[in-house]
Length: 416
Image 1 (spheres, rainbow, N blue to C red):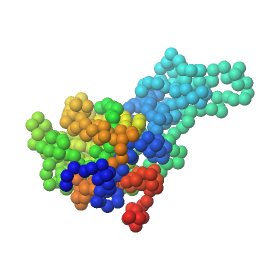
Image 2: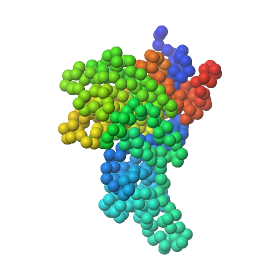
Image 3: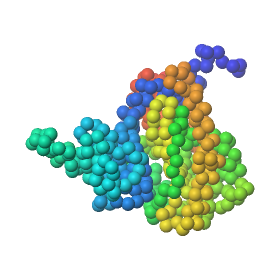
Image 4: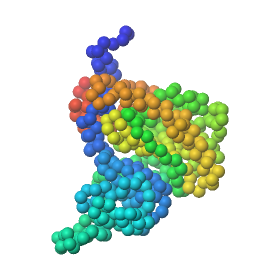
């Protein structure tokens, strides 16, 4: 067929409902705002790992759906999360990305979170413990016992990750993603893990496009390292297994590292209960990824910043008990594939950046195809079809026509 004219280019493809989406789901600012409200403010987000808060009074700051968040380890060793917002005038309390409240700061006392604006202080359970000029300013109309930080739902689970929700009544975390984690739970919870690598990147693309590239392996031809270490019948035969709430698990196989010059087997440092050189991936709605490849665990956390901008935090984890030599080996294994200059990560980022360049806010709507069917193996696009069906439910939008309300697959078929 010759190149298409404008009308042909915008026409619906000859595929079944659910096998394509409208590009406005990646570019429309109104849809983006609805995603923050309807999805990110209601689901669980793995904001960090407990090993990043090793000591009492340690903290990390982040954000969910534009809300500033602080996660801290209290004097009772419990990890808690709060809005990083003073109850007085809405000032952000802590500006550092991480640190400790054990020692005093220029603006406040030791073991306290202190707002530098007016010196209100909070303990690490979120209680207000000091109001400057409390009696003089408020007499008996308000006291520190009347105010405190906004507490958030927070759980440490699935290998020590710290999960936070802005929703006071979210789907229980175990119900939300316990079943997808079953394939790795024994390995991740056998003994304490530790973050050994962290970097973040702000990418000019929609966060769902990063999810999509983690959800399918049809783009593996872009990855030279994958081609020489992994392409065999077992690689292509892995299944994309769908789970409730939009999650997908990619099954394992044995990676042939000895086929790539300069690489070595990772069998000696496999995670507990993980067969040598195996590779599992858990892809969680709305865009978080846990990828265990032999000796190292990779976790991606997305923070959508705009329709065409996402911050991705990349963590690499090993076993806390590693010797210095073992840890260095894990770091080398991880960074050779997934570090900022690794053989896979930059290629994936180039792919989604190229997509982002064609789907800027205001760009003409077009059809994005999710129609490959290969018996639910890794070149099948069933993971994306499953994801966007779930996305449609949370957003009450039809992915292939986001101006229309969501229809369940059976109803959508009947409407055609």
